[in-house]
Length: 327
Image (cartoon, rainbow, N blue to C red):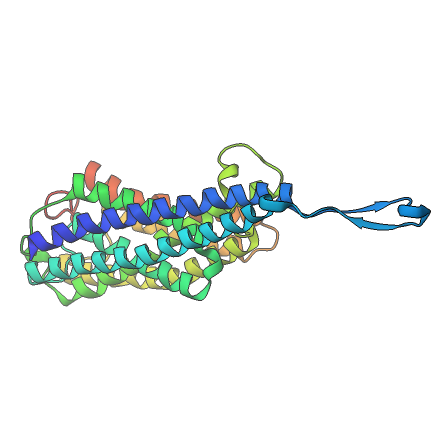
């Protein structure tokens, strides 16, 4: 089962890569279509005197073969986008299979080390994305950025974080392991998805304000900034209470395991920092005097603190939360 899980992860990465390329093709064809439509749009001209001196309007001749180009580009873009969406579904199924078979091989929940944590967080992120896509198909082009994140994180997990299946450390053998870690994973997965429309909003808002330099040019084919900002807020508002519960559950578990609820262990400290930053984002988002782009930057910083807690703390600090090597 362990070998099967490893193979499924590899196939999932390849599938996410194919989905990302398909999204990129949709982007490129969308840009061609925009230029073609402007060039090939039929024109109607108002002339001062028609034949025989009477005024009127004369419609320009049909554009001929050129007018079929926009529709062909649009059709190809739609096909590429649909392929990307369905391949993402396939990748998510392979991803789910990898997590399930890893758990079967370990005979426990597959969250016992850093590799398994990243594997499950990314699964939650892509599953949440598919729900969003199902409800709001117009947001499909965000999939380019989401699949890029999936490829990078899973490849990094495979190359740098991979460990063989091992039993849980004795300190983790508690029902609080399931309660605390599952909620942390779920909230982190939603935060992972939430940072995608947040970054997209910042780029799209700049594009709508007339900025034509990199990275704002990446956003010219994205949905309107207002919709991206609303999605960002909805995802963070949904994840924050779950994250709050996870932190509280961790404190209760720490009291039972170590005889103290909070000790400013590096992971505890950075979890608190993340909580404060995300609370600051929600407060800023609810304050009319604070601009939406300022609030969104706070959300982006919040995810950077999550990454610091996941990678930075595990690689550069030691503490009571250090288990299973790079865990």
